[in-house]
Length: 178
Image 1 (cartoon, one colour):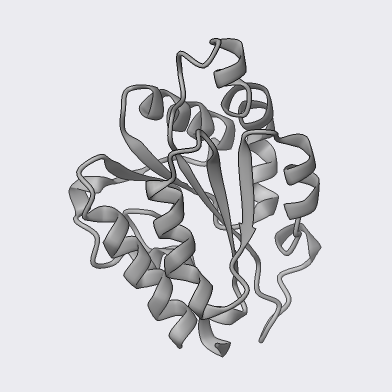
Image 2: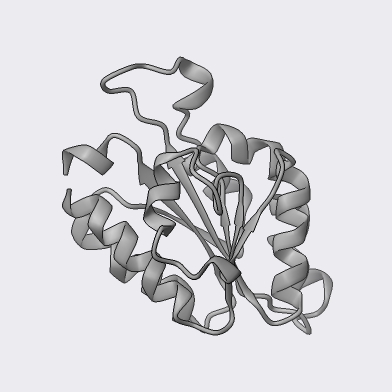
């Protein structure tokens, strides 16, 4: 379970930064495999939200504009699709629209749903990495394919200074397989 342990270590590392806050569904309560990676994160940094994906992405941008570094968690790409308006038309364009006066830093965590041991059907296992990367000019989308890539990628997302935001894509099947 090296992959899962690296995710857990990454979340604990991110939480040690005073600017970070975690938000989404099943963040402060159990509900997804991602919830288990947040068990050691201080509960004051966890903001549980209702199922309102576009609102969540708008809140993510608002928090980032205030100087926080939100880690916005969408357990699957299929759920993140419901926030594409905020992602593509606002987060990706805020620097351009403000003549670079606003350069918020945020991290979006999503995943490709697991298909083993039980396939949850196709509305839960989409991988929209390439499509989203093509739509965005100030967001980098990184697939976390190996355990060794997990921590360095989250570290890069937190400390990068190039005005690029990051979407990190996890593989649900790897939580128990790698």
